[in-house]
Image 1 (cartoon, rainbow, N blue to C red):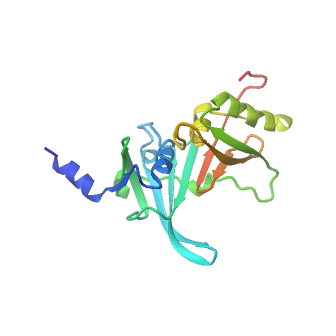
Image 2 (cartoon, rainbow, N blue to C red):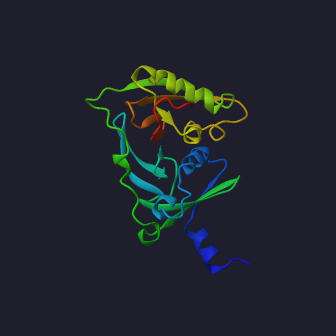
Image 3 (cartoon, one colour):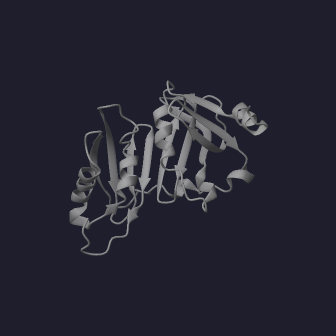
Length: 212
């Protein structure tokens, strides 16, 4: 028998079945939610609703953001009915994702996530083209990034964060690939973009001459 609390949660939750076009993207988004119980606001996602003008045809759209403080995942979509601006908790199963709206007293203050996005204007940056696939390993992907950075100094990123940002095991079936554009500045955050998805991964502090 369900408790009153469980019934109330199901009543206000938005159910995303596995057949929904944003199901896998939401699973990807959830990778960046903090598991650190001492950082309570980071255990929720932030949703912001606005207008997006594409080809002079405005449409309602939503921005969903999750961060653990060392990386951030952002999803832009116009395909989830019922979303409103605010904080949400997420419950994931193999067949369903539940987005549960929470009040500000519960979620606390979510970080000003737009300040995390790198600002490229007027700065020297360099980019690399990435193609992540289920057949590639974390080491191969990391090596490509480090090779691109070699002339400007070594930049290291958390392998687990990078793998999850590229969607390995989340955005693919048994086989497949997805193209990502990556750009960064020396010793700065790495920005990965692919269509409606954006990930920002902060660099690791690595001692000089340290091995990978």
